[in-house]
Length: 192
Image 1 (cartoon, one colour):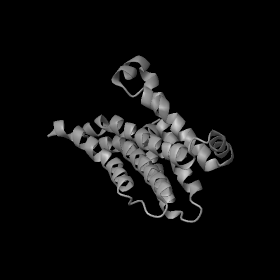
Image 2 (tube, one colour):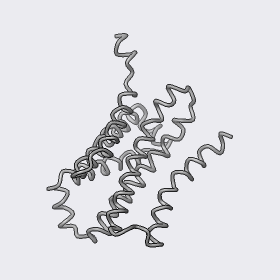
Image 3 (tube, rainbow, N blue to C red):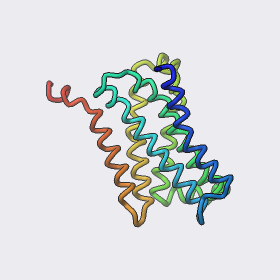
Image 4 (cartoon, helix red, strand yellow):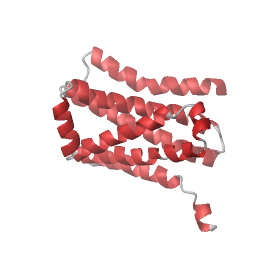
């Protein structure tokens, strides 16, 4: 049963990609296709951030080790969907207009923080292998704590982007905040 768990999680994680691909090829994106792709990939990035952050608390509450065994895969899907989100903006929306893209990154805080979150994901992806865990030793855990900053940046990106509808972006912010609080070892703090 456990041997099927990881492949099943992988297949389930690709469903959003195939869904948006289907919508693109069959012209089901609605009146604003670029906005739909951008929103879809951005939201799935946040969903995978939440899933990734929930693995350690799930392990602590259930005592099942397999939660952390899929954490790396879920983290790589964060990068996958974040990259699709960025590529939609760079390739489809702005058609490689680097001057306009640079201006946006500098002048618009929601784009700056979203881009910063994506850049911070790169070292995590490059050091996600078992070999890098061995090479970096205790520094690996320190480096991978960047996911906390990335999660906050991602939720702020969504909040600052939303000009009128705040419920959904705030919901992600609350979920991420709760998941970060659950990672705090309160016993260790109060036993000092």
